Length: 164
Length: 268
Image (cartoon, rainbow over all chains, first blue to last red; front, side, top):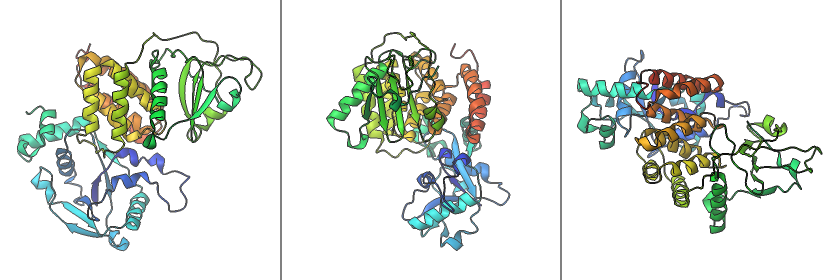
């Protein structure tokens, strides 16, 4: 299973609408699959999801504000069938412990992106949200425990957390 | 109170029908039209929950694709069914795609002379908000990240106070304004620390919980979460009761729970 940060509003179950033909998918989710060098960043989850909290915290810490964090979890076992590769690359969050779980989905093309959305769609997964207060609390705990160093947060995030 | 009009029912009743300008290719003339429209929306407190705004001197119906706007008072004898109706002095935004029921069966309201206080918009605030929204169309906005747009909104509210809130809220009703940009604006309004506009921003965000756009409702919700004002809880409970999107309903419950932990006296 992998985790991808998204905007929940692009994935509302409500939008899995009857106007979609056959295996078609809505276009809005494409906005959450912005590629760079034909890759998309995702995070590998342990099978028991034991690192979920860590990954949420790390991703939230990489931003400027402790806003709610929206994410999708989907099964990546079929990606090979779509011609999509997975490569282990170092994450760039302020949380080194989480960065080892970073993966790139590689060799992406326009068609593969649509297929990827279709795959996610077919798994009937729901975009989740970690609320703002929870995000703040997780970040505070991570700072207190030393798993995230304040210096590695953006100046804006430090200001927003009241530590500057 | 809501009054809805199907423009073809009022042909010949002095109602003007116009297409909205394409914002990406807006000319100076289009800009002038927008200014006029915003200006009209902003004359009178069009934004309060209970008080409809004074209608413009001439009723206006705006169309853009399937979106239909009506704003004005129609009290003539020439409406389609031959009966005299007074349409409320209120602006509405109706999408025939998303709300066919409303377009097909317009509610006809009884005569109303309610008007809001006479408030004139600040032309500078209007221009500045217009410009900020224009620029934001071209800025990639990422959740949780600083943006030029959010900084501009902050600066505008600090500079113009309540005068900046009115055009921002009016932008919500303008067809084809990016929902993502609107949501970002609402989140930013909630995030601001500005006691002078606190109540105005709170009311604005609570009103937007009833927007037709799920993006806008979500933006308003996030903004309210940031405001940490427990007086929003009643409005949030009402919103949760009518929210049709399951995920949003759950998010509202989370924010209600967050606000339950806030000292109610903080902003009173």
